[in-house]
Image (cartoon, one colour):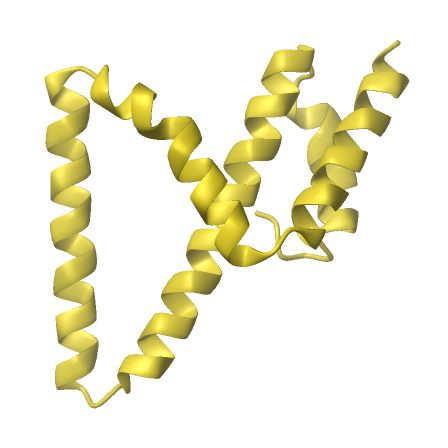
Length: 115
């Protein structure tokens, strides 16, 4: 039973890897829109603080001479990796699979990109 769930989770992760970046992000944003609206005030404040940290980090790197294209590339790379991780974790939760059981398999699948 758990082996079947792990296999299905692996197929899901492979599907995410093949999905075009724009479609992946668009679908994820649609999925979480309702969730974001229902979050408690504390989470919204944490989110705004996080956004401000990202903006400060971007501005600091621009001042250091980092090109916008380099910043954009790495922001997108981190975002896509995080979205994939979040989606796999969500699916594993739906299946009732403990993170320890699938983390090693996902590391192989994402070839070290998954943390």
